[in-house]
Image 1 (tube, helix red, strand yellow):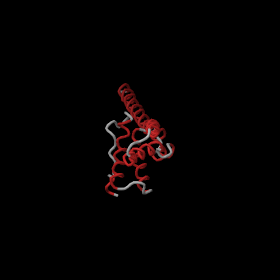
Image 2 (cartoon, rainbow, N blue to C red):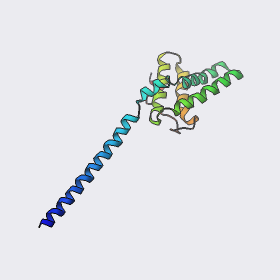
Image 3 (cartoon, rainbow, N blue to C red):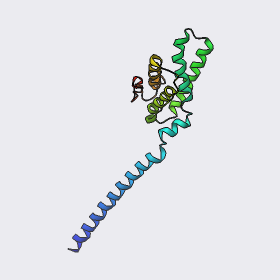
Image 4 (cartoon, rainbow, N blue to C red):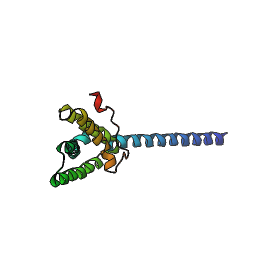
Length: 149
């Protein structure tokens, strides 16, 4: 009988130890996600509101208005594109589309683009991850289409 009680006690101890280990692992994983990941908004601010992405998208939309672009403008647009891709890479994958949408909404609120130009702005911004060959590779689908404004 004493052996049975000792065996049951050892078994109960192992179950408690395993349960505590699982709980600890769960807390650590969830804690890592909270502490290591910055908010998307903070990353957006740190990237200066995607300054180069904003410049690139504006230049793309405006180039169709300007007709033929000069070589200097093309080089500037290419440089903005490279820097935009760098900005996107420095932001968590889960924040890229959200921050691009926020960038376009800010441009929209400033009244810089309307109608077809606004549509082009949204479309160009949504394609940036795909054009930069980073995730999401299919591009972004913004929660608020341009025509709802």
